[in-house]
Image 1: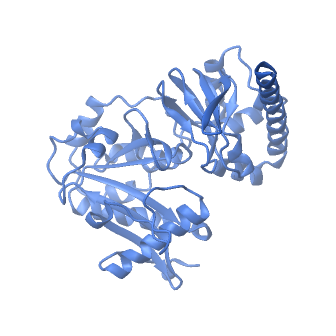
Image 2 (image 1 turned 90 degrees about the vertical axis):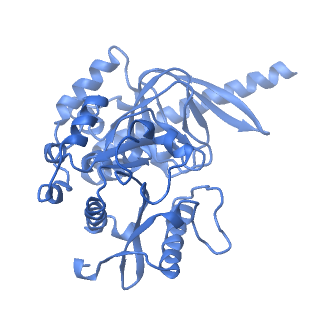
Length: 380
């Protein structure tokens, strides 16, 4: 499909908005299996309280809507208290009224995900935001998508949050006039930003007030050997069962697919019933694993440095357990999309990975079975 079939649009009427809501339902509910409150299942529409006040960007071809993005501009209506807390907006409110926007509901049809469509949608939305005088664009995403957003030029700047509908999320911000950052990380937005007038005030203010950690590695800037050295130094003498039997080069190749995620004590990471999106390797800290039985939580125990969870992501299954950080924890997240890419690029490595996953699963289920048996014996 060539670009001439793609049409970028902004929804201007009820019918266009309804087509976007129907597309969202198809992707989020039918394809991804998300359990979301206040969904109109009868009409198969996914819409929330922010939609009527937001600008709806979308792409269509002769078959209809196949990608969408929603942006709420602060000049149109005030932020809610929840939005201010989730995104840490209190520090940004001294900027002019139109300086901030919140973007979300980014979705694209599976058949178009390897095309130029995403670039067309995001580039057009970026130019629209600059025309409106936006300086900061905020969003949040699943850990599996952090790497994509960071390559676009978004940055992590605050603690992560837990959304009741979609689970663990990472807040990010893009400073739209920070042309130097876009150039440095080779963002596709640089091609637009460099031709526009850019005031450095917002970029300088952000750099002064938010110390973005260097260890949030940009994959297009750092080679695999450097990444592996960081992780091996972090883990120290702790082994990683997932990497048993791997050569150094294979370890480097796998770990280079990952994204570093920090989780505060008490935060949920995976939620039972959601489709698995990511596998996690614990670099530091500890998590507790829970399952539900007869409306009660049953602890399966603790996982520490070098251990993994979120295995359902690699077998295309629903999460069977909840995981909670019981101390501040650092994770390496490997998304199922990275796993799929790796499967095509390096099938030998993927075969080793699958064998190790099976070993881990068998040991874990054996441990769980023993705990259940012991629990039953105690009741007798």
